[in-house]
Image (cartoon, rainbow, N blue to C red; front, side, top):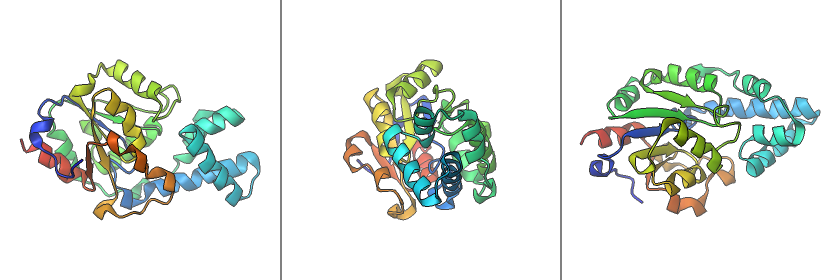
Length: 233
């Protein structure tokens, strides 16, 4: 594992796949904290629980089912559309536009995709605010995945089949290491995005995934610089 990309190792890549939250837009803008709080509110109101109990349940569902939504669907038969609409009703001005990132993505040869456990509308609004939306062929969201979230293999299978992606010709960028396991197994190059300066700022210990290191080819705290280095070939 190295933090510096060798452009020659990316010369064969034809498909570039990006997670959204804390990957395309940076961790330090803290946008996901709004979604996190809205999920707590949703669980609290749904089950008439105090916020502390609702938050503990929210994180339990996340750990056991991959997403809070999946857990709520399986345990409480919630309407996924209602959940997705309410938890993504947030202030996107927290994202700073990044034209240079858009240019770095545009310069990559081949197709580019967003692959997110969030909703398409959330991805569209975040990408528009960031200034990168025009550079992507498609957004593959939780609905396109049949409401089965990453890291489930079925989600990746649907994505790969839909877009006829050949694993060894693709690279995936993610901020959660376990979400790189399935891409790695089908031959994708994998890049883990971490907070700037490699700061250990994750609030939930289960997002660190130390046992998933062999699923990660590269680690970077600067997506833009990484893409520019790759494209420099």
